[in-house]
Length: 190
Ligand SMILES: Cc1cc2nc3c(=O)[nH]c(=O)nc-3n(C[C@H](O)[C@H](O)[C@H](O)COP(=O)(O)O)c2cc1C
Image (cartoon, rainbow, N blue to C red; front, side, top):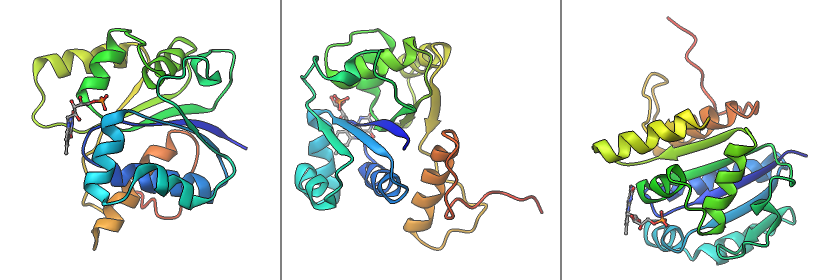
């Protein structure tokens, strides 16, 4: 069973997080979920659903919700092996903290650990436009080995709904972790 750390922060696009979790549940991965305070609040604001109640409603025994201030959690240590970490969506605030190694809460520390251990770490950000500060921080993360994924939808697969746009992005993100899902409509050329 593949194991992932999934981070949620206070950027717009919490619907992607929801789809990611449901997809990883469907394919039976073990999940260590960690959310910032603002991540939980934006989730509730955008999806009109309480974050913790939502996770409980999944009734998934392989989902572990980690407390953001629990520095004793195993995901804070490089000796705990996972297949990778995905932060979706990732705010520019969190990107700045990771880029500068603050490690001051569990999500940032877990990401710091994955990067130092040279494990696959995908950071899916949403912001527009990007300032020089954002670009510099993203460059630092890229140099540290992260996969930098902008949450920008594609249209070459002719999506007919929001659902199809989200599926395409989740499929693309999971393909970096060698997971192929049916909804992932690849560009086959013309
Ligand atoms: C409704 C809402 C939407 C937001 N969207 C974004 C966003 O798309 N990108 C971003 O970088 N910050 C966004 N923010 C700002 C972040 O939530 C804010 O910088 C926060 O401090 C991030 O904290 P965190 O990184 O600990 O989650 C948004 C805030 C709110 C309330």
